[in-house]
Amino acid sequence: MNWFRTVSVLILFGILCGCGQAVVLTVTAVDDTSGSPISGARIYINGLYEGETNSAGQYIYEHGLSESFRLGLEKTGYVPWQSLLSETQSSIRAEMSRQSASLTVTVYDADSLETVPGALVKVTGEEYVNTVTTGNGGVAQFAVRAGSIYNVEVRATNYDPLYKTVEVENAGKAVDYRLIRNDVFIVEVDDKETGFPLSGADVYIDGIFFGETGAEGKVTSFVERERSHTIRITTGEYLAYSDEVYIASDMLVYRAELSKTLYPVTVSVYDVKKMPVGKATVLIDGKNTNTTNDYGRTGIVYLEAGLHEVQAAKDGFTTVTKSVTADDSLQDVIIELDYADTAVTITVHDRDYKGVAGASVSVNDIYYGITKADGTYAAALQSNVVYRISVRKDGYTPVDTTREIPLGATEMAVDIEMNTEFNPIYFVIIVAVILVGAVFYLKRGMISLKRRGKRPPKSRHL
Image 1: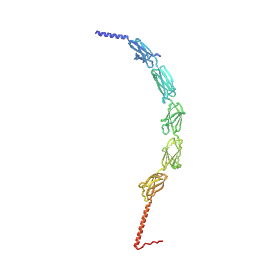
Image 2 (image 1 turned 90 degrees about the horizontal axis):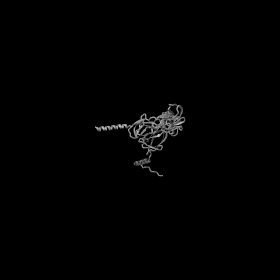
Image 3 (image 1 turned 180 degrees about the vertical axis):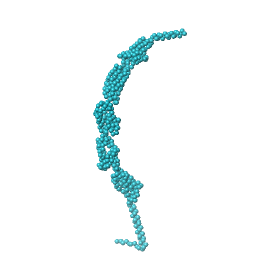
Image 4 (image 1 turned 30 degrees about the horizontal axis):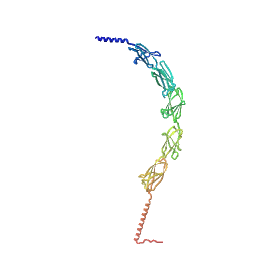
């Protein structure tokens, strides 16, 4: 029991001694220039974090250290502050210096992403105001205090103003801003007939070339609002377009419709003999345009610039389609028509009108084929032509005949008769038969006379 009392007394004595040695240190952080309190400054004792200053810039540190110690303060935007304090010191005023930082602003065009030189960049913050003009690279540089928030205002001719807020920490800051042009003006070009966008058209405004229309038929330009401008559009296959336009502040898109250039063209139709073909029907791009006169020509037709299909047709001739490009060099479209083919049936027979099969058929000395079992042969021959038809077969007399196929005839029949060929052997046989018959007849007559008792007449010799 006495032991327990002794220990308790010793412990109580130690606590009382410890409470008697406790020291309260008041740390006050202020800006070395303005003297204003710095809140949120981090407190470090011998490198160990203890806490942060309050809104009055103060921090209360109670300790029982028996030797001097190192006090450190850190705050974004300020140079770190340190000091060695004795263990009995009860207050300290830490005057912290602002840390310098670099704020770099680069200005770009929002559409082209090219830098914008000559833009005014104004930066304002706590006790800081500065305006810098961007150089050729679109860059404006500012030396500011770290740890502060700044307002950035950017202005440039023909651009909408830009307002931004940026926080600069200890390491500095680089920001990129894009400006939107307020003088953008779009020219849209369409084909008047089809309504489709027209690409490749050159667009000029007040004589300045702004570019060619793309696949969507548009060109982006930059013009001064609230005044009149001359818009001119040209392209190879279309009539040049020009208009005087007042461009108001709210006008963004101008639409122009272009018509193709018209070229006067005539169509001439001839046959293979270079003779005019009258009353031929002429179609252009599938539409019936005209009919040729006795000289084989149509009247003047106006064609839009570009590619066209010209077709000429007439009974008795093959239909011909020709592709032409209407431009300054095209004045007369010449089409040559071939004579149409006629289905010709050649029938070869003998004098008894029996078909001669296997007879070879040639036309104008060109071999075509042989007749079928019924003696016929079918051939496609061009009309309005005179042909020499030759038929050959062993045992038959060769036949050569001429036929003219009339212009426009679709079918024609040619009838050819072949006679059996005379054979000398047959003549010899016939003569021999006749002689044998004559001899037999004479002998028979002499025998008949003898039976009657008559002598045959004697021959007289001169």
